[in-house]
Image 1 (cartoon, one colour):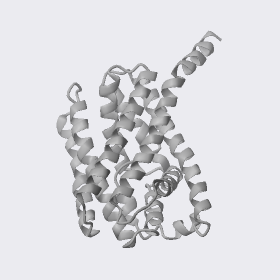
Image 2: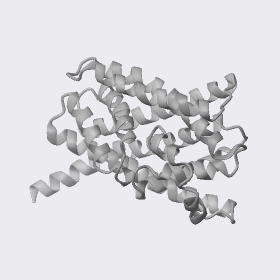
Image 3: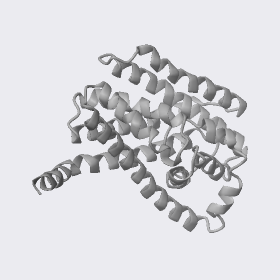
Image 4: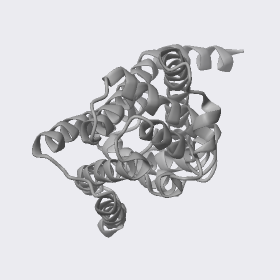
Length: 277
């Protein structure tokens, strides 16, 4: 009885940090949509971009192998001149910018850990892939568009670091900021090899390893890692459901089935689209 009471008290104590993490993940999804919108060769309202991006996030939570990225690309391709190829080029450019931001973050976070610093060089591989896709998409990058995308991407990274730091604080992980700076690139790398829906198991395990690398006990690191994944997935479901309702309401002719039918065409996007969510 005493153990159960203590567990309930801990849950209540962690509630503010967990709620803050959910809010940060919602902000990260908004910034992700903004970064796509910034580099697309058309003008979209931010709400419309978020609706299309959010439906892809919803699909990623229930479909394996990040097939939701294909749904997301097909939804944007409906309103972008140049169709799928133009969207994939823009997405690849966004991905390159994100990885260039995350690689130094991961290197800084591994300074006081036992992880080999060379392991973060893996983060440069998606940059090369993204650059090839951007070139194939014949993407013309303007300075103002790149600046806007960079601001949105900075918002994504900051929001996710704050979310991971909130989880670290909730579970008493030492060095919460340094831990969060390692968790974020670790999750991005884990997202590249996503197989199960919502990257179940892999994402939580990657976060747990990152927390453990900064001194958290195995049990604490596992609990924090899987709590982080649960909150991120729950936020994606909530934002995605609201996005689906908003998108169908504003576009009555658009249905999830029509997006699904075109899923096979952007196969490279679902396999190589960088980032999470």
